[in-house]
Length: 362
Image 1: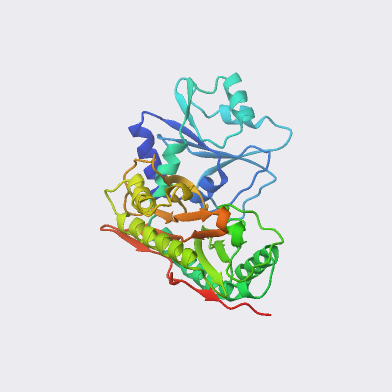
Image 2: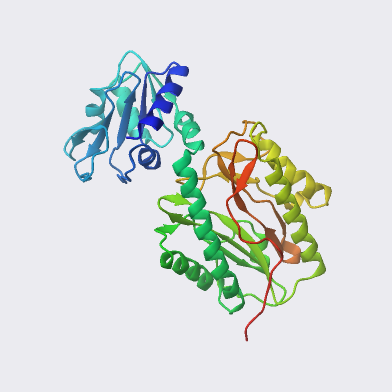
């Protein structure tokens, strides 16, 4: 296990008067051990104790070739995995549980009186994961630069007459060809009115002259996610669409300028939202400004009006304001990832944000 990360988690546990914690989220277990284990319906539980003696309860169906740095407690399908876990828990003390542990396992542990009380302690892991160390920061840089290259290849394809679904397949092909293990999320490739739906599901729509095209894409490279959005236009752009585009671009820049240590996440949201509102489109900005990202595309800690947490160096999150006008068939969103530094932020995406008009091919 990564002892630096474990030490940070144990310190947080002590601060909250918690001596023991169960981690079940495969992403969190990868974060701590460097190994992905996908247990399906079977129990996987990393038991941490501030006194040491950490253990990973794991089914024999998931043999490990490399050492994980923690004692492995094996079980098979004929055994009661929760009863096995209960042999190691401190019955007279509270036990932290993360948010992904299935209720069936928790209820069974309660039947066995595995602890004196049970606490939702997901925030302990989430808070540690939110601050990326130097290695993680470099992996996020590399993933975002690779995403820039995919976007550069993708944009010319928007004018070639593909349907949204066909264009989505092209996105996946570009990621596969460039060494990514998968996409970070289902790509959004939305023409015209489809782009005015912030989370449109791709369909058989084809782009036409004057359409805005929202391209929201990300890939997984070396286990870390990228995510960016660019909006381009086919053949021509109306004066209204151009105006909307420039408002979104300015709003996004204001959000980037506000992203610095000591500010709050809600301050970044407000920097984007207040400008869009000032320009008369507040009702058309219908989602939060961003989300944290790392091993998973959406991690704990969003950029929203209600998140008053202080921004700290090492955080990575998206800044992605948008304006959506379904009646006029205009949708514009611009997104970059930022890494918080000691005195501001580093924008991880470098693909240009100047308005692009893509020629339509016959």
